[in-house]
Image (tube, rainbow, N blue to C red; front, top):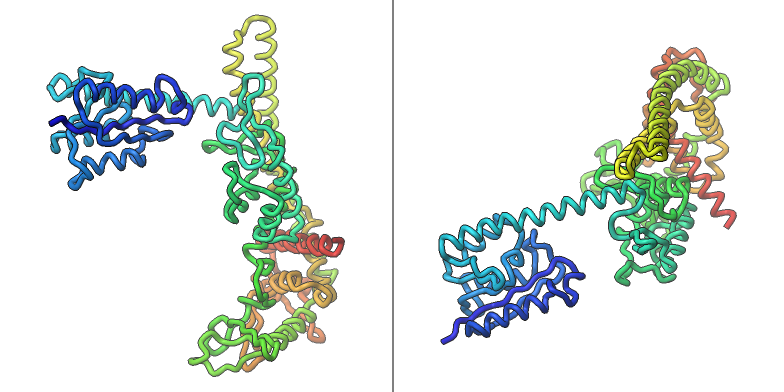
Amino acid sequence: MSKRCVIYCRVSTAEQAAPGHHSLDAQETLCKRYADAHTLQVIEVLRDEGYSGRTTRRPGLRRLLEYTGTEPPQPIDAILVQDTSRMGRDSTEYMLFRRDLRQRSIELIAVTQPNIDSSPEGMLVDTIMAGINQYQSEEKARRVSIAMMKKFEDGWWPSRAPIGYLNVVRDGHHILAPDPERFPLMQLAYREYATGRHTQEGLLRILTEQGLRDHEGRNITRGGLNKMLANPFAWGLMRWDGQERQGRHEPLTDRQTWEHCQHVTAEHNKYVSRARKHTFLLAGLTTCALCRAHHTRTVNRKKRKRYVHCQGRARCPQPYIPENALEAQVADLVQRIELSDAFITAVIERIHDVFERRATITGRKKAILLREQTLAEEKRRAAEHKLLAGVLTDEAFGRLVPEITVELDRLKRRLDDLEGSRRIDTSVLREVFQIAKDIPAAYARSQPAMRRRYIEFFFTEFIVKDRTIVRPVPTPFFATLLQFDRVRTKGVWQPSVNTNLTAEQYVQFVPWLSEQLVKLRGLVLHENLARSS
């Protein structure tokens, strides 16, 4: 009775699967020829196309392991492969697999390596070859990694093209080019999303209707669109292996539009601009004075009314509160807030000196970076002159210039970051206070999203009892203002000019004030765009 065997074939890439010396068909032919010559009965041929030998997550290998398990589909006597590297390139995994085969009296036959057998010499050669196979894989991976990093340093994306681009070959170089079908749609995505008029779900529907698909022709998912909108690759910044580089590909949008898209996403994720069936102006801001639980909201469709109530109605006797009654009380609180011109001027003057000190420190750092940038540019010019003079070889120039270019890019990013984090101009702070001063008039005519922002500027919470706001909780900034020499005149809270707050105490709130300004500006822009459309 002839022995039974299984043939296993594997290639790492789709290109290797094409007709040729290392194709799957060539491996199968070699193994079948060996089986015929040695009267082996082939039970099944298993093939893994496009799977690395460094992983065991291969469908063909998993099927093969069924034959070597405790309950095989059919008992086998041997496994035929072209060479041992087809089984895998992880020496540890390979040797464990060989041990299991010996325990089950299954022979592994490498048809092109006849010196590998069950003899002590054959096992030695097998062990050596396992180490060589792993070395070859790791060495190839290192060469590929170096080549990809070199391509990245040259300003080209070293991997598969993102949606909107295609991998093309021009003048012998693999580069990115705009996809004639997807590139215009991705440009549309950034333009429309930056307006703030679309949620990501709504934008995805529009893009899908217009034909946007991934490279395999599948619909883009909501998560996929979110990643694309957040990827700075769109305006030209590439990130690879912990490094950043300005790409040479054609950008989908400009940096300002991309940054505004990030602002829109932040607003959607945190505030009431998120798409919902019902939106409540005071959601998350009202708390029951008795049970200290946040209120929940209910819509009575029959009465066409919306109510606020405690989450645990069985344990709390507080009644349902019409939402419009609470909103009216909050509006009254907002209407009674005013900051005087004198107060605004006093604050601006007090923190001006602190800003100037920060500007001096930033200026010193900037001067150091500019000196380093000048030295790097002079080094690059010197290398170019040496190349022209024949002092520097092309190979040495090719190694030196990319290093200098990387350094110049790093310095440019640091200068840009320094400029972005420089002192906040006092006019920005003045604008924040002017917005705060204009709240009573602006609040009444604004849309719900804008009203929410005005409320959050001054209040973090409203404590409610018997359908009445008994205690509004101010923001840390507003609480600090009220803490020092507060004066109430005709129901108006008016902080005195002669406050005891130091400049540093004001400055601690500057990041928060700046954040509020950005959010207010964004909402104003969204409303203006909505009205213009």
